[in-house]
Image (cartoon, rainbow, N blue to C red):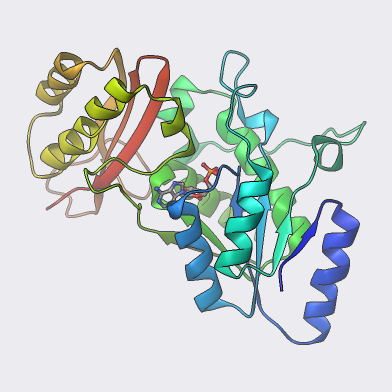
Length: 274
Ligand code: AMP
């Protein structure tokens, strides 16, 4: 059975009942407009724990002042139907007032893995993410939490927050789910025009080539030639610290990209082949 709650007190009541029964709990934080990528996280969570909580919350504090908060896709009915079908036990759909009541005044600031790449282009983003994820964990007290590698830097930032603040959550990353043409599934793909959607798979082709050793600068040019408007970054980084990759270090590397297709900003990444 799938139950939906909005308030933190309802969530805690159910979570504590599960604890009394000795049941383990996995959480999947999302911003809704759910697709097969999100549902894959739910599936992994169901395989791992006795009970699965999916939060659906478009967190305003992780959007910059000029970003897409007001037009971010929302589909609570569709999300509920998909999560019922997937077998999630609890859907938590808090309102902004439940998460940020009057007087809310704490913010988590993360350095390290949060500083480069997205951190340069979206300077307030990871503070908002780390704060909301810590709140989600504080309320739901999950034993496990599932995040997609699609947001690879976010996963690194959350691992760092959990480590630094001694949070009792086992964070698990899940490989990116893609369309047949390679485009990573994303709620933001809904913004793409049909013409842009045809161009979009060039992004994954570019990072796959760079992962095999091709020159990143050359592939930036080829993305611009394919119709992308601007490349925020396309770079090879240390997969754990996200510092510039040291060739020959033998450490795992990651190719990460953020690029604008019309008015839509797409991100993607893949493992460096060494
Ligand atoms: P979002 O709703 O965009 O905040 O994403 C919620 C979670 O789903 C995050 O952990 C994302 O990394 C993950 N996610 C989003 N898209 C994908 C995808 N294509 N494959 C795997 N995980 C994904």
